[in-house]
Length: 290
Ligand SMILES: Nc1ncnc2c1ncn2[C@@H]1O[C@H](COP(=O)(O)OP(=O)(O)OP(=O)(O)O)[C@@H](O)[C@H]1O
Ligand SMILES: [Mg+2]
Image (cartoon, rainbow, N blue to C red; front, side, top):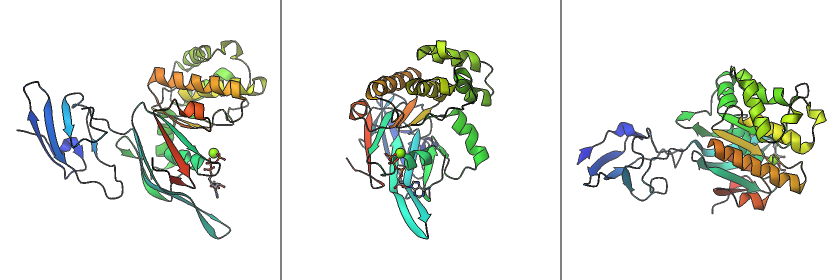
C-alpha cells in the first residue's frame, strides 16, 4: 500500500492511500472533509493522476479515472439589492461547478437572475454572500486592479447589445483586449479571426457601418482574441433575427470548441441549449435541481 500525501488533495484533512495493481492502475481510497461553506469544494491539486487511477467512491467527477478540477466554482451565491429601503434578493444560495472545456447553458424566465449570475461569475460585480473560485484561486474579494488582468486575459464576454467601441473599426475593436494584454501580434490575430467569421472585407468598417449580425461576429472575435479559458455570453443573439441567431451561435460554439474554451451561455433558444453539455435553469433566483 503506497502512501500519498494529503498535499494532492484539498482540503487538508482527507485520508488517502493507494494500492498499485499489476496492470499499473491503482485504487485510491480516500475520505475528504468537505468545506462547510461549499459542498463541492474538494479538489485534486495537480494533474499527475490523469488516467492512471480508478477512484472510489464513485463520484462523477472522478469516475473516469482522471482528476478534473473545476475551472469555475460558485458556492452559495446570494445577491441582494436595496431599492427604496427594501431589500430584494435576486439570487438565492446558487452553487455551480463548471469543468474545463465544458459548454453550459443557463436558462430561465426573464427576471430569474441569469444576467446577475453571469456578472458575479465573471467578477463584474460582487455577491452579497458566497464564494467564487477560478481554478484554485478565490476571486470573490479581488479588487478592481487584481480582477482586471484576469478578466482581460482569462475571460471573454459576448453581450446581447454587442458593446463595441463606436470610435474603433472592426479590426481595432477586436485587437483592443489583446493590446491591453501587451500582445505584439494583436493585428494579425484580429485579422485571422475576422477571416474565420467571414468578415475580413469589413475590417475597416465602424460599428455603425455593420449589421447586427456582423457586429455580433466582431464581438465574438473580440471575446476570443486572448484565447480565454472561459467565455461568458449573455443572450448574444437576443437582438438578431432567428436565421442569423442560429448561425452566430453555431459559430460561437464551433470557435470555442476549436480553442477548447469553456462556454457559459445564457440563451432562450431550446435548439441551442440542446447542444450544451449541461443545462441549468434559474427559477426566481434559485438554481433548479434536475
Ligand atoms: N442593480 C439592481 N438593483 C435592483 N434590482 C436589480 C438590479 N439588477 C437587476 N435587478 C433585478 O433582478 C432581477 C433579475 O435580473 P436579471 O437581469 O439578472 O434577469 P435575467 O434573468 O437576466 O432576465 P432577462 O432574461 O430579461 O435578461 C430582475 O427582477 C431585475 O429587475
Ligand atoms: Mg438578462
